[in-house]
Image: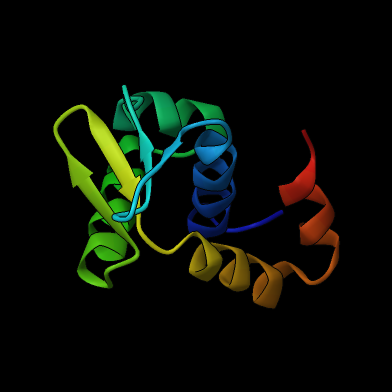
Length: 95
């Protein structure tokens, strides 16, 4: 079982599929609420908010009203792979 932050990374990668790619990054709009994300990954809303805020500080994503812009999807993937190993690659690539 992965920690909340890694489950969040996987969920963000999943949400990014099929969304608009711009020079700024992948725009997920309309973005699910923190509560919806928390429910989908089995976490508390507060933990999701904290992790999204941290990812914003690190420049991995930009969280704006009604949308999430993933600026560095590759960074999310690398973090999951470092934590979960190669098996995570298969999960991230599931359609």
